[in-house]
Image (cartoon, rainbow, N blue to C red; front, top):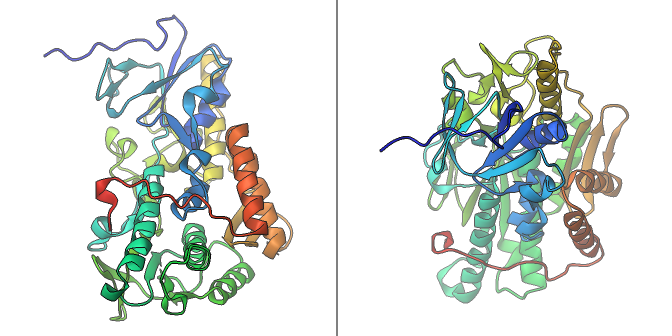
Length: 432
């Protein structure tokens, strides 16, 4: 059987840019090239862009999946030079300059942008990949929500078969772990107090486990102290300074010998590019967390027509060798910079080095509680920090409809505890 023939994006004589990935980084590149002389095609196995910072709210029934996802075709509906291709990339032919897809003809390119993201990093912990619940994709969030709600419904339906309370373990003390812990506890409170589930809150536990000695280690100490205080006040147990040695079907085993029985283990301990397309498509040695090594202008080493950005790339912070963290602001900024450098190359101009502008960090701990550290000024805490967090996330949320729905939902939750989207839309494999 003959291989599919490579085709031009729009069958034109314009330079062709193929972007693999429709996340923050890939969308930023496409936006930067919109209206240019280049023909651009975004390739992704999903036909939507996901606003990942709010996935934990989908997972804990605070938002619907549609609130944090937006069709990629709709984003670029007014940009005639930007197209979308729904498909799964299987390989990159660097010599032929082709992107190989699982179905349909291959895509020829003049410039290739690898923005394929990352996946959950399990650090070789036995059982973690098999039994824990990661939170990186919309499918992860949907699966986790079904698992949480199914577990609660099962405990309510057959109380004689279970302890009176329910326990969930969250692994990871960074922003995702802290935010998820707070939201899981709120979900338990709502389900018992508003929905009347037969579960004893006093004997229910959300336990956050992390190897570090404090939560939110990337934040100033005052923010970590405040976050820990709020978590404990909301009956979330902190197990810091211990490592998860094993995840089992019934809980976790810690490095101090403790075994915690849990109805679910949520994995929020970090991400890695290992095993992803970007890490395996290129012949050279990968960088930290399996990320693609790039030059200071974001082009891939020894391949000036290939670029890597976002979570998939070991993006250098500035003139030195320090690598940027895998965060949404890095993905957005590197995407914008990549688009500018591709345009420079097309115009015969020299490329420029990427410089990351750290505008600060934010993390919400639950209803009316958050911490925000801007580049300048003190740490903002409490309700004011929560409002700052809300405003920033609404600003970056794609699509007016999404902003309106999320804002309405958040305002209603601020004033009262609504019934919320606690719907179990479960496939067979999501049953606990």
